[in-house]
Image (cartoon, rainbow, N blue to C red; front, side):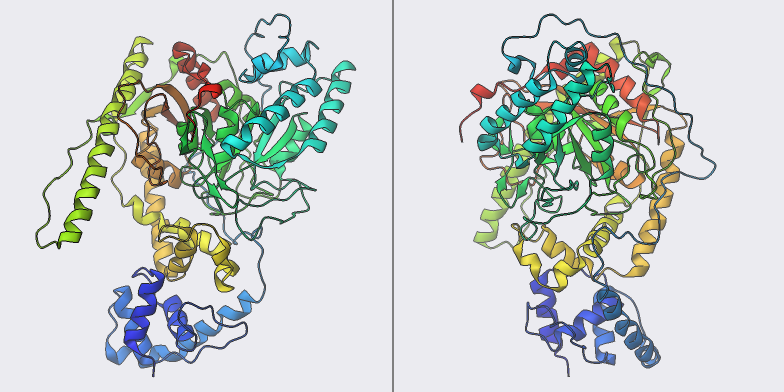
Length: 628
């Protein structure tokens, strides 16, 4: 007979959430014949599900099942449990998607499919190329493109300069997984030959870039940042890599990501913030943000599922575009959540993001979530015609910290409570300080003669919907959990992937579907907001980040100033628990949102804002980085 006390102990050990039922029964039965903490041996058939197991699972799941209903469930549940092993025996690779496609468009909505040639701004005036090409390390794409197009700088020379910077700065910042030097130099030589022959492909031709190392590149490892995958080879080029190759861009490096796209800690250490090496660069697009901010690539490609472009762009003071879900194909990219993953550029300006986006978007015939929608970049677009709203409550003064100590705490618990209170006080002080930058954004927009419209996000249980991500991620890395190879991952805490994957296995299919139905409600209510505004202004963190990743809306994250010496000090140690820990001399950001597939207008509005503020010209003085 299965021991109830042992079962609850096993659940507690693994941090299982109280959401289960058929999956729980499988786990209960499997654990009944397996040593605690060990995966079931391959080919093992768990004992039959019993009435007692159903009672235990129902209690844990909070599902009322009457005793007289249990006997008739036994046969069906045993058959359901027995259906799992044949699917597992297929050993489905990460690249196989589910047989369903998420579509963020609400009913009666259409997208513009008419593709037009990009409208570029006037070519920047350039003089003679600087003797020291590192003076161009932080230059925007239009400026570098003009140097390349006119032959004043060669792609070979530019590529050699960026590779030299990578070699010099990576030992300090740890953003590099693999240097693709041989491939890069071949591409650079080919670019110079083509341009000399009058075959100029466009503004990315000959410009060095870096790829987040979840993008497959033939002949090079694709590590996903994770222990156990350091030598993984995928024999294909991701679609975005192919498209950037076709545009003549030069891939110089595969850049770090937190293991399996979480945080900034990977199998080689922690990627750091060029503005302050006491801090991580945040993640999971840790390497792309750090390397771009450090002037080691012209631009990079990152990805976001729930903040992985937004957070490192904020921390590192660069511009990140998280496109509409279904705008950029993810073929050849690691899957974490098929209904939430998005690829996008991390650059030095909004215009740079638009130029990269112009190259990488659109269907590829493989990623079936991608719509045939147009991204028509117009650098001269009249942004004054746009209706601009702001999320009013997101700009409010942060609420005061409740300092009432709970009664009945032991001395040790009181000590921990006081430490936690001090942490919350410090976090609020930083939030109050940063609010001044957010409010200055609204003032700047009013100075641009924009009439701001206050709006609020729909009030729905978004955090409950985030369980969708965990469930899909657990499926994407199913064998990692079942084989016990999750032990190879660097991070093993309660909020890290190994525990999340184990917990998600007990998330019921019915609740997954219900959360998706709630997501449909969120999509439709967000659609109502964008009937009244074209652009939404918001601080970069907070609830909007969860909402818009669930609903698929695009975001652009812009540098918005540098904290002064009067800024509250950051925590002594960056635990990775806060997206934007701040401190003197570090950047802040602001986020603009737009309606689905209105990414070009979003970039045009951001382009106008950054030209009015010049914050996009900020870059870290790397010779003055505080030493660790």
